[in-house]
Image (cartoon, rainbow, N blue to C red; front, top):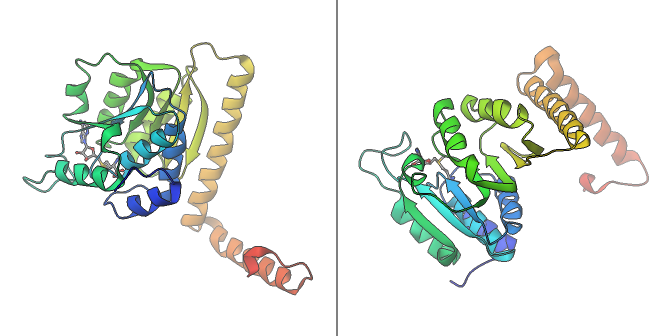
Amino acid sequence: MRGTSDIDDVERIASGIDGWLSEIEGRRLYELARHVDPATCIVEIGSWQGKSTVWLAAGARAGLGASVVAIDPHEASALHADGESTEQALRRNLELAGVTEGVEVVVATSEEAVVAWKRPIGLLWIDGDHSYESVRRDFLLWEGHLVERGVVALHDTVDWDGPREVVSRYLKGSSRYLGLAYADTITHATRRSRPTAGELLRKRLSIVERSLYEARVRAYDENRFHFADVLDIVNRRGRRRRRGSSSRLPEDD
Ligand SMILES: C[S@@+](CC[C@H](N)C(=O)[O-])C[C@H]1O[C@@H](n2cnc3c(N)ncnc32)[C@H](O)[C@@H]1O
């Protein structure tokens, strides 16, 4: 198949690949990859069978054309059955999506791959082992190669303690990262060496806003103080009221 860059084609192909990335997350990776300067590259830590790799490579292809370096040992992780390798599945999926040319597959751990690393990185995507020690190690080993205004993105930053703690300590808690943004469980931020006071203030506000959102989601999921029951009743009433009114809203159809 020829290289696909239409985002709906990418969605169709990515949805058939085994993995844990949601469509919203894939689309965000695609957008981030589109803007990466081809003088830099996109580094992925943790490819599995290539769901996120395909989104990144297709985004880069549709945008400025940066290449993707996909780093994964492809065996012996907590996710692999004994003797299983995901390398062939990754290569097959890249072929299927027509993005093989844009991806350099590196069969190694992130700690091995960083030893001889010299290239500037425009987008660093961390989705390897999720323990705090591993995520922290991946972040600290690689972030020094990020260019000014480069982006670091981490997966599973809501339900997993490891990525969440790293985001809290090294992105939220550091003045070197601004522009915190979220897509489902992805958190990403932009590296800046000299942020302005206004940018730092905006960052603080976005952290408060996200904390309130996460608290609301938790309260709903756990039905704290009957929050979910009440919200569901209010939403149902709202829908009934809109149905009776003269100007119907699209969601009522
Ligand atoms: C959650 S999966 C990645 C999912 C993938 N990004 C996707 O979209 O489907 C985690 C991957 O990290 C890899 N991994 C584990 N330890 C690693 C390390 N030290 N360096 C690089 N990759 C690692 C595993 O082999 C596994 O394939």
